[in-house]
Length: 280
Ligand code: AMP
Image (cartoon, rainbow, N blue to C red; front, side, top):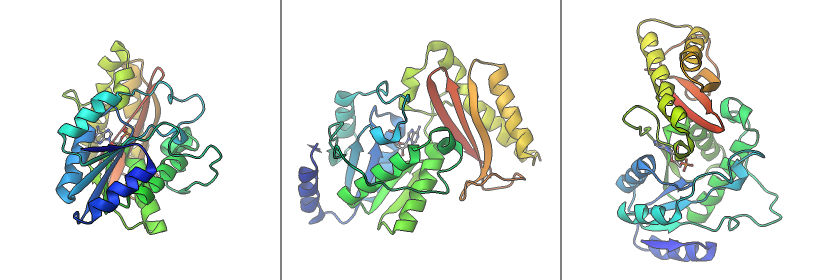
C-alpha cells in the first residue's frame, strides 16, 4: 500500500496508476475505521482495480461547538486496517493540508441539504460537498462509495454529481451494524456505558415502525411519534428529529408507501447518532 499526505505526491502516484489501472475507486472517510468502512472498501474493490481511501477529518463540515476536536482519531490503526483490506493508496493529508488559510470557494447543494441534518447542522452539507468535490478533483475516481447510513449525505452527493457533471459513478453501500443493531459509527466510541446500552433502541424503533408499515400503518406522523416515544420513554436518549421522507427527493411524505425512508437523529448527551430505514 502506498501512503501519501501531499497533493503533489497524490497526483503523481495516480498518474502512474492510471497507466495500468482501468478503473479507480475512491472511499472517502474521516478515519477511526470500522467494519462499515471496510464494507465500502470491499465494494470499491469489486468495482475497480485501484482503490484509494482518503482519511481526513474535514473541519469545514463541523459547526462551531460541534465535536471536531473530540472526533475520535486512530491514525496508526487506520493505516494497518487499510493495508490489511488491500487498499492500494491511502491519502491522509495533514489536518490543515487541504485548505488554503484564506480559502473562499465552496460547493453547495441547496435543496436536499436543507432539511433533516442540514436544518440541525447549518453549513454541514456545504462542508461535505466541498470536500467531496475537492477529493473528486484530486483523485478523479471512476467510482466512489458512500454508506447508506448517511442517507442524506448520499442523496446530496448524488445530486452534486448529477448537477455538476462529475464523471464518477456513486455507489451506495448498506449499513453495517453491531450484533444488537446499532449502526457502526466512529462516534459510538464516545458513548457513555448507559447510552451505549440504550443506543440499540434507535434501530429497534425503526424496525418496529417498518413492521407497522408492513401491517398497514400509512400515517407518517403517527409512526414518527411512536418512534420518538419508544426511544424517549425508555432511555435518556433524545430524538432530534424523526421524519418520513421520499428516498430520492427527501421531501416529507403525507402517506407512507414504498421508497419512503424513515430518518432519525438522536442525541445521547453530547454524542449525535443517526440511522434510517427504507420502507419496501
Ligand atoms: P465517516 O468516516 O463516518 O465520515 O464515514 C465514511 C463513509 O463510511 C461514509 O460514506 C459513511 O456513510 C460510511 N459509513 C459510516 N458508517 C457506516 C456503517 N455503519 N455502514 C456502512 N457505511 C458506513
